[in-house]
Image (tube, rainbow over all chains, first blue to last red; front, side):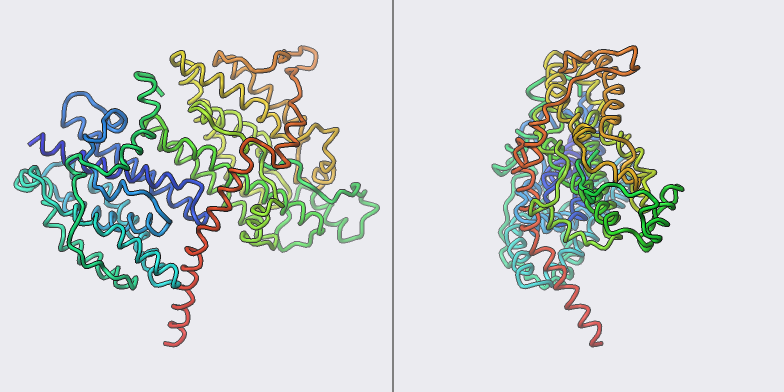
Length: 250
Length: 329
């Protein structure tokens, strides 16, 4: 059970860690000042969530590893994040679309975790859900406005959706540990979240005048540690100081 | 001090007797310590000088995101990353208040951006220096925010109401930024040999540019007198520079770091530290656009603005479409 829970917590924490990193790459480069502020805030929330999820993962593992140890001292094959969150920022439309797709997933996942039978998971989920509901409100508002905006903004949002759509399916892919956690009432099977996600997200995409790609094929591997080429570079950058000066305190 | 060499009218300061009644009444309000509010009458020179100063300050906050943002993705711990993100977010927020304060003087944020992007408006010279190692993030908080506070604390009492109120909020956050910078410096200076080396390297590179932040020496500062009469500048450049050095030298000593100026010495008679002048030729080159990062910094801001045009246009198109639809209903 602990092993399954540990894997699950790494997935949650690695998602927010890697996405928080990506979002923070925008610092100072956003299209308007308000977006610079919003993105920094978003990234800050995601890093905070990472500390909670990976902190708990360390406790469950019981080997004395901290959230920092997980973030800075693992190699790519030990990361359990979705391929979606490691995708490069692209234009601002792609960054927004990535955020929107992920916020929807977080939202339906946290709804279930907020009634988890594991008290620690439940507490974190209840705290984080407040932030995520704001994230989704913000990302969906912008996706709708830009999808139903100018011709160019519509085209860019449609292109972003098509680029990222192959990474949506992985969110709902069940791994072996998921059944164990679902049986124990700790976390839902990801496949069980698909309907709720569709119900939440498809009307919003419709409102944004965006067409959902038909292809059912999707990329996968992130949750088992087989990532895209991008993650290695994210880690090379993120882990530089910890790797170059082992044991230093900062 | 994010506003350097702000041009004022260039004319000599008039005495009260030389002023027309309206201007005289205005000056008397300032002399009495009253705040001037946006709708009050003000001399055109006052308005223009303030727009230059506030917008230069705002631009500095915005461009200032870049050297610190340079290390966000490489911050060494999750906590340091979160602190740095929060700090840079604060700087962007300061930019926002300041643009709003400038807008009360009848100039839009878009116009001010245009002036920044075309090179017409300046921002503080300090942000044209690179951040090369992690201790630079400490040095920026300690020295750069430290120097900024020297100027901004008195500006809380500046004569223009919206600027003064923005400054009160900003100062609270800046003093926190300075402390977090010093906290990084302590970790580095009391850390391992490599970290000490980074700390010293950061101090070596940021010391002189930090002194330059206060602007040229008083004897070369041609626009100060009018700004001081209007209370939009409250201390001279040299006064503030001295205060900064007096505060910073003991802090460097505590860290066991060496100020890269052999002439720094306590002067019993003056009750201040003596120190050398920075290289003013370098300063004027940086102001002209020839600093190590001028092109990159401005280029990054222009690119962000240009790349974001579709985003801003898209939002406007949506708003217009729906305003029309709402009106038709």
